[in-house]
Length: 73
Image 1: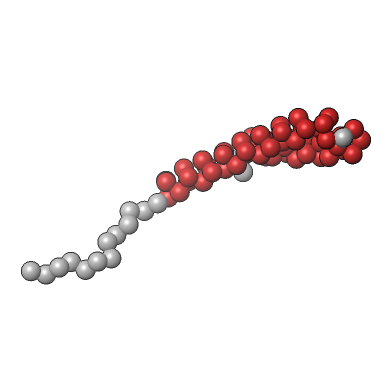
Image 2: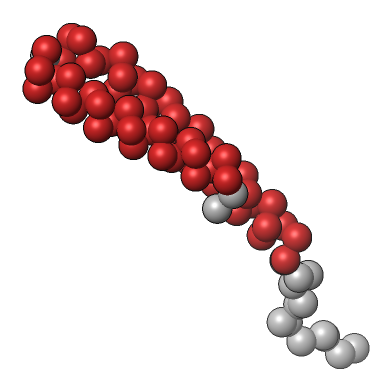
């Protein structure tokens, strides 16, 4: 995990914690935007992880050899 990924994930968790606190104090109407920011950051985090995983798989993939035996004529 890169530094930016860790920061995005940490900020998303912080928004969730603050949103839960604001929900208990003021109600869901006041904390809705906090939860939406957290969900947006979690989507962004997941997108970055998937792109990093795809790029690492593309660089480490080896060509697939054919397992079929050659036909003799």
